[in-house]
Length: 240
Image (cartoon, rainbow, N blue to C red; front, side, top):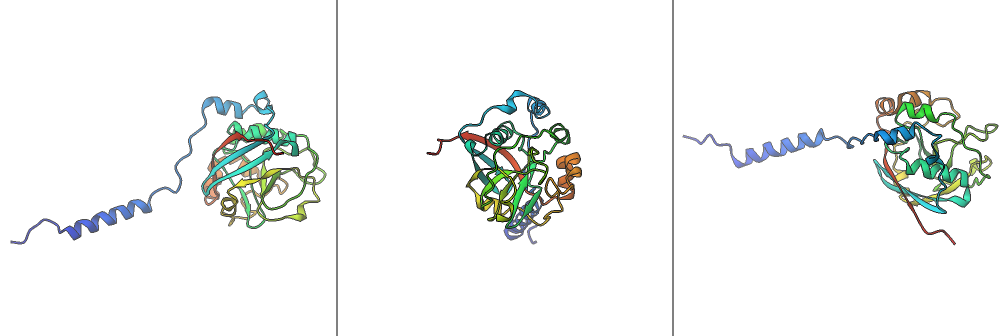
């Protein structure tokens, strides 16, 4: 009488198929941790003095993203007001669990809308006075965006990095705050398929749904957007 025990080959085949099925259904990204109650309370209170701490002379902002890690080097002397704002946004968790909502290949990558609609509402109109212009938009430089010519003094939370040399933007009074110190290839890999459709810039008037809907809206309507998981900050030696 033939044995009813399955052959070793059949057992191995079942195991391979089971593992393959599990791999196909594995989520691409681990879920992001929600901010603590204390952190969220701080994010909802832009008037808190914690947001105005002076930045170090030079700091590194380490962005952990869905494509890997990149590091921005912020030089305070290049724009003290903007450097202070950026340092504190990074230090206090504003950019954690946010999306690169505007990426145009060989042009720019932009982010800075929060994933919580209440936080976006709290920061709306919390404009920053201008620093002196330092508008040399070479590859790897970064600056706060603003609402366009005639709307100076409107920098807020949104930042862009130049993915190429962009001299066409040099005529505008952007204040470059530093350069990408590590991971430029990570920024080059960010998903750019949505172009200007997934919110665009601050002056195009398309960001309302993203501000009001937060991550839930962005993830539903633009699921391929890359993510910032977490940002950490460290002080480095000042440049000579």
